Image 1 (cartoon, one colour):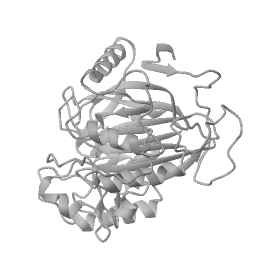
Image 2: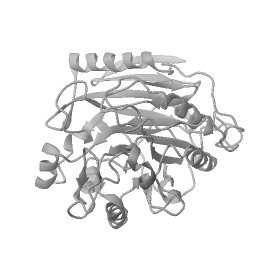
Image 3: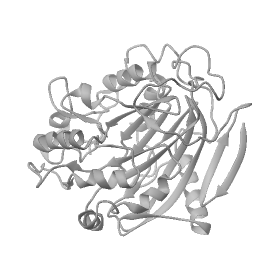
Image 4: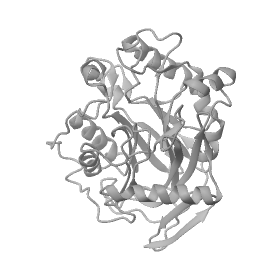
Length: 392
């Protein structure tokens, strides 16, 4: 039931509540240890996490998601000057969330790019980029994107080594497909949260060399749809909330392309509760696909673009109890000198209305519908239909 739509603090809040359900997340400590879950809060659904109505054993958790980040131009200069403040405005957009995530649109290297790839734009950033993300309260990033291997195989190996050294989770890349598709898993206030990352966008001539396989390092590719679906299904069995963060869409296109909608359905059927996307550098629509929540494009978070709609920015907050979406909100911002500046007042109102209208060309709804996933769809092997590359 729709209870309230409120404009508060410059962002829009949609909230759906069941009887007796507590829709606001309480602050909690994030840990990867599987300690005993608290027994307070709403009663869990019968069965297991394969039940689309599953609420887990813990409390509501608020997750925040931002879009594309790189360290070129003014942002690169800020990183060189002080990594601790390079992304400082992002922290305000993510505040209040217990876990947050962004797309790291760059290769992570320890020095000069060792093997620049034959493509128009090659982005690389030093180890201090992870310092900047941590200082901005970004919990985890994905490098499963069309710049994750911009510095070649040697650069990818450096990315993996740096992430391990720093102890910071970088998803969607690996020494093989198993590692690239491996989820980030944590427990927050008794709820087991898992995130998987993959990319649908890789330059056509680099797909083969960049795709992680059983024997080849690389990126988690959404074109390995069977592997991606299987990763979601495996993760579904042992987690209360499953998120998939995808690099997908067509640059500067405000509506989903022919790959995004069928891929979203396949992943929701496999058990994904939240699907988040980036790449287009513009915002796309967000809403419900059955009982799951999908955002087809968050737009830029920190980027060197200087004109609208590429400068329209913000962060998506979703409060969820197990698999139940309690509510969501959009915190709008406008990019200036590479960084998102949070908006308020009439500017925020206009930005929120613009964001809402983007849903009109999608298959999404403003309110939840009937669950698409079933215990059968969450366990049987994927047999198609398969998506086909659209090019970079």
